[in-house]
Every structure is written in structure tokens, then in C-alpha cells.
Amino acid sequence: MSFLKEIERRRTFGVIAHPDAGKTTLTEKLLLFGGAIQEAGAVKNNKIKKGATSDFMEIERQRGISVATSVLAFNYKNKKINILDTPGHKDFAEDTFRTLTAVDSVIVVIDVAKGVEEQTEKLVEVCRMRSIPMIIFINKLDREGRDAFELMDEVEQKLQLKVTPMSFPIGMGYDFKGIYNIWEKNINLFSDDSKKNIEDTISIKDIQTDELDKVVGAKAANTLREELELVEAIYPEFDREAYLKSELQPVFFGSALNNFGVREMLDAFIEIAPSPRPKESDTRLVAPSENEFSGFVFKIHANMDPKHRDRLAFIKIVSGVFERNKPYLHVRQGKKLKFSSPNAFFAEKKEIIDISYPGDIVGLHDTGNFKIGDTLTEGEIMIFKGIPNFSPEHFRYINNADPMKSKQLEKGVDQLMDEGVAQLFTLEMNGRKVIGTVGALQYEVIQYRLEHEYGAKCTYENFPAYKACWVKPEDPKNEEFKEFKRIKQKFLAKDKSGQLVFLADSDFSIQMTQSKFPTVKLRFTSEEI
Ligand code: GDP
Image (tube, rainbow, N blue to C red; front, side):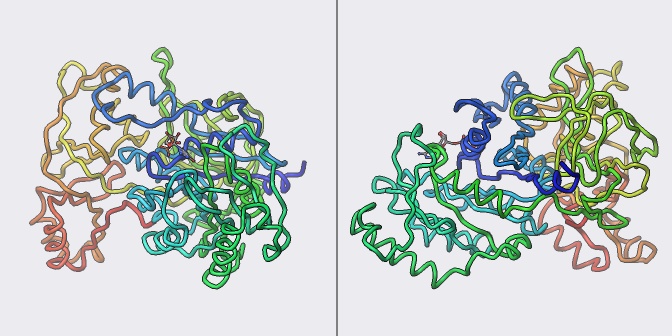
């Protein structure tokens, strides 16, 4: 197959959802269609269960699972599908944000009864800002839920999207009869036997004829006709260009658990979802079809086996062909590296590959060279943009609890920060180190891993910060900036890349500071997203 065809047939995407909406169940059903797994239950749920906070073994187990489910690849109707895992747990939201830099589109799962939930809002906001094309799957139609129109209203308002339904439910919950596929103009009747023939659809050429009444009954048929009229009046026709620009989001209804409405969505998905998209670097826009290889690290995973200290760096291929044993430039370090055993991921297993194409993810064994955001090229000096750090929500001093092991502690902290587990800030005033995380769970993970992987011990002490604001003075030489640094010196720190950060203790303090020093801009991310 030609290089361009290989690119065209790839679909690399993420499934995002608030925990419990059905992300794992849907992913599993998608894999079943690809023949990548034979039975339900094969996809591990990498959810951190409630109460797991103090259970280290549980955390370790979860970490193992998340390597297995980091990338799930399969072939379906001659398309190569790469699903990138995005943890729903809010303590791991940063991981998800970073993974979103490597997807070309997303599927958003929403629970029909709960509607738009908090994590959905946060994740969709990031996708919207980055203009990532989104498909919405409204799940659990077999249960009593909310009215379809009301839900679509909520999606438009809370998520600031513009939607158009591609399928429409016939009844719901107890009365759920099936789904009318607006895209294919047919009906799929619901039966809660998940083993039923998934291709079992009834084609309805004209919903005005009594063909429809015969299939779903007169009452449901009339309601459907009215609702479809309303759909036509309210919602725009599907427009692929608008979808690709993230200006219009198609909506599908179904029940992941019953494997219902999933095939319809998948078939539409492979038709409309984008193949790998060009990516902006600091010097230029890089197209997938370029001959020279380029890619970037969006995730690093520590090895679960204590005997092997190496890590796995996940690279998204942006352009060209990645080849085993070919030297590539690690741009930040300015040195060439070769990889003798790059991994590709297929459903649950990983295997060594010789060659990979744009859109694919390869896992590279790493002994500490990589950090998140690193770029690899064939020699060109450029860095892919768009992997910012977000302000942490928790801050603690980290202290060395074993003076004999300070080197180990330093190395451990350094590597864990490169993996993106948390962020390190060094206070300007006294050089003390503060660790910032998105969730409290990370402190236990760090403590546990420092001890078990690096032989170092640490303790924490509260640091009274509320948000980290990256400081961008309009003029670093003006008096205002000097005054800002003098007054705020106790709260200033450097992040790991040496950028100046103001660790504010309250929202009020941020506002006061901003009005007092208007030329000193404060941002909640390390770079613009
Ligand atoms: P995740 O946290 O988003 O990955 O959600 P899961 O896929 O683990 O699903 C959460 C719960 O909802 C599980 O108990 C699933 O069995 C259930 N579930 C998922 N899809 C459906 C559905 O279509 N109908 C019903 N009734 N339950 C579902």
C-alpha cells in the first residue's frame, strides 16, 4: 500500500467521558467490531476506584493496566484505528489533556440520565480550544433518561457546541424500541440480547409510509415522525467540513452495554473522522505526507517490572515513516538516538515493529532521555507545540527523609516530573522544592514510587498555594516588573524549564496582583493552548 494510502486509512482518536458514563464499555464494543478481542470483559477498566487512595498495590495494579490500555489499535473495514486511552479520574486529568495533543478527533460519551458532567465539560473545553473534531455518543438509552432534545440543548449550552443528530432514539428506557439512523435512513430495533445479529437493520425508505408503523407500532411511529420533523427544523444538516473544523458536532444515541447503536456510530466515524492532521511546530506546519519522519512524546510510562528500570515513551508520529534502528534527532538534547525494539500496540498486546506511519503511536524504551513534549526528527531543528503544563491544584513542600539518599531523591523526583506525574517548583527565595499536583492521589504515588524505584524517602509539608500562575511581563526591564518581583518574592518560583511562576494563595490575591501590576500577565498554563 502506498504511503499516502497508509496515512489516509488511519484514524487516531480518544474517547472522553466523565467516569461511569461508559467509556470502557464503548471502547470494548468498538474493539469487538475490529475483531481485536473475542469477548466482552477483555478491556481492563483503568479506573481508580473510590477508597483506593491509600492502597498502594491498587495504584500499582492500575498503573499496569493503564500501560496495557494506553493504545488500542485494530483494523476495521480497511481502516487502521488507534484508540488512545484517556483516564476519566480527575486526579489524572493532566494525563488526559496531554493525550489530547496526540489525537486527531474524539468521541465524547454522555450518560443519558446524567447529561453533561463536570469532567466532560473540562475535557470538551480543551478539545474546543484546539478545534479537535468531536462526535457525541449519548449512552445508556436502555435506561430511563432525559428527553433527547433537552439533552442536546444542554450539550450546546454547557459545552458551547453546535450539534446535529445523526441518529434518533425511538422511545427510551422501558419503552426503548430502537434507533432511527438519520445518516443511513434505516431502523435498528432494540432487543436487550447483546448477542443478537449486529447487522440486523431494517431499511425504511420513507418514514411517512405505514412501513414504519408496522415496525415500531403506530404511536411510536407518529412520535418519531414529529420528532424527526423537529430535528429537521432545528438542526443543520450534517456538514463534514464544519465537523472537521470543530464547528459542528454529530450526535449518536445508543447503549454501549447492549452493543446498540455502536456499529452505526463506528461506520459513520470511519467515513467522516479525519485521518492524521498536520501539526504546528515552533517553526512551521508539518504535514503527515512529508517524507521525513517527525514525532513527539505525549506520554511516558515507568516500567512495572522492578528489575527493569527503563520506561516507555509514547511517540505520536506526525510525518514520514518511522523505522527501526534508524538514527533520529532528539531535538532538545541535540543528539541522535536509535531504537532497536520500538513497540506497536494492538488491542491488548504490544509487539516490535520495523515501520510505522503518521497517526500511529510507537512505544520507545527509554532510560531517562525523554520528557513529555520532546520532539524527534530526521535532523530538522523544530519543536512541536501544544503540550502545556496546567496549573496544579495542590501544593506541598517535599522534604528529604533520608539524608544518605539525597542523590536518589533528586534523580527520582527529576524522572517522575519528566513523566508528567506532577510539577516541581523551586522557590526563588530559599531554593526549597514544592510539588504541585492535580489530585491528592499523586502525592502517595510519588512517595511510593520514590521508595520502591529509587530507594529514596520523602515527607511532605503543606504549602499554602492555590494556583500556579506563569508570569509573562510585557517588559521584563520595567519598574513595574521589578516591583512585582520585590513584593511577591516569597511566592515566586521557577518551574522545571526555568520559567517564572507566581504561587498565588487565593483567587483574590491573583485579582489584586493583576490590577496592581497590569503589565505583568499571569497565565494558568505554561504556554498558550
Ligand atoms: P467509564 O467509567 O466511563 O469507563 O464507564 P464504564 O464503561 O466502566 O461503565 C460504567 C457502568 O455503566 C458499568 O457498570 C457499565 O456496565 C454501565 N454501562 C455502560 N454502558 C451502559 C449502557 O448502555 N446501559 C446501561 N444500562 N449500563 C451501561
